[in-house]
Image (cartoon, rainbow, N blue to C red; front, side, top):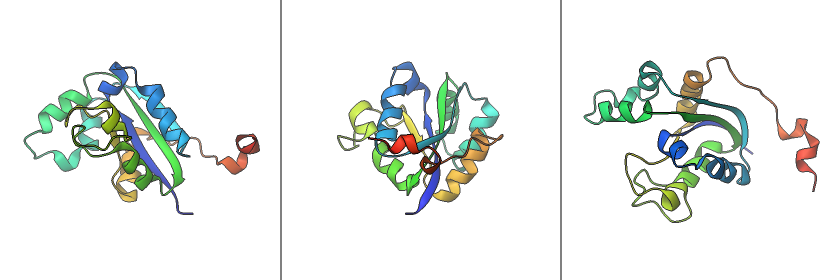
Length: 151
């Protein structure tokens, strides 16, 4: 097993549409463990740090406006190859092209309002988790909680 941690943002459109519970449930049913969770309206500074690689792109101002437009849910998740697992669950960036059964394929018909961000590499996940969880988060594993494995 290659245990990893990754960041998922349930963007303002997911919160506004009442999809938070459904999306967290899908991630947990896949076997990912939430080790950090917070709901907040991000500041422009936090959003700019998070999306720094897009700062010079023409869509950056609209991206900042969208991501700071309302509350989002930031999740730190842990699991076997968590980065890849999340990326596969989320689906293609453009919801119109995302495969059915993925989060975006089932719930999004937009490229920009696409419900979810998932880190694209372990290195990005580490950088992003420091932005959204600067104080850190609870660290525990299923092995510490044997009742999670009870049938």
